[in-house]
Image (cartoon, rainbow, N blue to C red; front, top):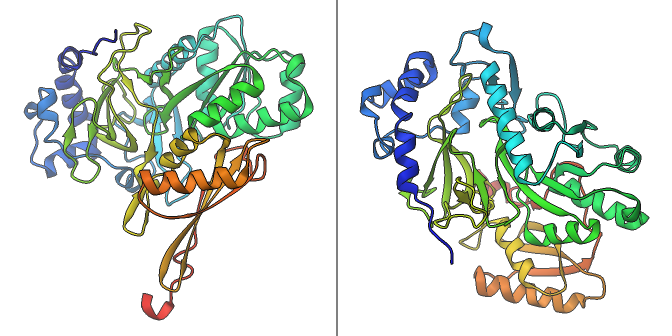
Length: 428
């Protein structure tokens, strides 16, 4: 019988730290001092979890305006490192770290690895990129803090990755979910599994579904774990799912979590789906107050059966900025993942193409089918489920497994050509 997680007890504990955090933020961060003053809020106004609801949110667009070091809440001599978002949609977000920030992040990452079953005896191959991106160096710090052997291959060069899996006998692979699938399929094609020592996989950096998880696990014969994080909130390692696989444990000794309605901003209770908002209670270099992650999930009311004292969120359904609006209906890629999970013979990979024809939006989905499955049946079931569960009619095509592109980074699944096809006279 499952028991509920006591969020009231958690909030009371976090309320002990909240006033000190707000005072420190007001004193040290010109970014937040101006933000709070602009909202007419003084530090003494925020003492409880309820008081926090009156504080304006922080969004990534504001963080971009603070480029390069406007987010710093410490003197420059206390900044020992910076990391950055990709900046693919504008100016990157620069996040400064203090020594304490780096240590806390390494400890959270080591906690993630330990929860997934990594030990000091493991050999951990780290395939995410290094440099300004947080992933590679974040995983390496956690592996070393745990006392395991780090094999820091970095991104790409699949031939070298496979060679290093075989020769030093890697036991744990860390990657984006997309690259995890690419590696698994290549290992399967070459028949390498019997000579490898892999036992665990830790994948993140993008939303991935149960179909992909099962496919990677079946090919490699390993257990996989979904790790969560954002560059703005340290990086990867602020949460992970455990061997019970009931959700993602979030490290609430460092993070205060809220779920809000992404449209109204209203705070939602545990159990209701919305957008995850995070306050970084212990961060020094660039602390964040009510930061909108744009990730859709929910605080799970149930406590995890593993017995860990940290609350669960659901695995991320989607990002609010990944939403597709077509024929008046809002669609998230995670909904397609869920539908594929329900369809016998459907594989994990899909691609969505949006076009405009004669003034009307059209959506075509290409899905991969498993070997031996009837492609026409898979496509028909997919069309039927999308109609019944999402409410729109779309074209669906099923193709053999391995047809769609694979990625060494994150897989692009949505191609929207509607703006390109608009009549320029109507646009003007």
